[in-house]
Figure (cartoon, rainbow, N blue to C red):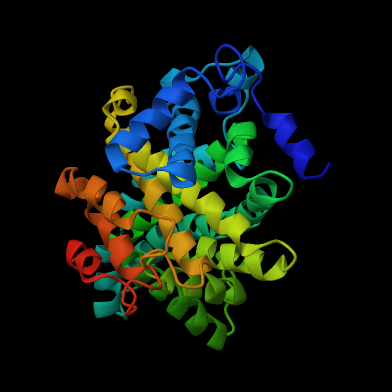
Length: 367
């Protein structure tokens, strides 16, 4: 249908409240936002207009980021909120990663290789886990394709990134949901190193059985070739985020006629929107749960990491369009236990943090 057609197909007609977007009308709340932005940041001219527009955009997108504040026509409310069925994986994610840990059985089986009963118990315990791990691995492939499709829709001419995010709020929400799931998955994966130990036991067992010319039924589900691909995936500290970073870089490299600024400006604008929502009392007061707060923080961190992988000089240099000091400050104002994983993601999964162009102050904030 083309870029414009896709955007119009998902735009919620009533999503702006009364009238059209305030940024386009140029009056009322838009003017107040621009005035407030000049006063609080000391910016003027074009720079103030850009940041003011992002304040307005943040208010408009809040109806999508905060589920309890959704407005619009009945069709937009009743639609299935997931583009990929991510809800099924996301809702059951903590339990699947935390309760399927059967390392104790495997450890006993390794220590007693001649105990057939222990071997059977360990094998029967690990097989369901392997099927679940395969499900998440296959889901990462779907996310990779979906992310590139969303980037295409949110960056293509003739609209600017801000105009895209205003016109295609549903796509922006799906983009955010993918990032939220990704950061949540990787946080839990890093807390459960036994996942890789369990999977290693599975690979060793099927390799041993192959040598002995034995074939197990589960190999129809996860054969040696699939197990090798899954092993490479789970060997990454943050496998889902690595997948999305590669997908974003692949999108930029494959679309050489599309200016890279279209992609980086889209990412930096989303970062600014999340930051504004988190640091502005007027907007933050509408967050009805801790999970909504975490949603915005995960999306902000995820977009920063994608930006840092795509932009030639990254997100931490002085010329970056992302206010890294402000974003880190917002994170550090939260309870340490809730944001430590997100700060670690910035420390260890970004590309340019340790470049010479990164200021000492930013490095110190992330120490």
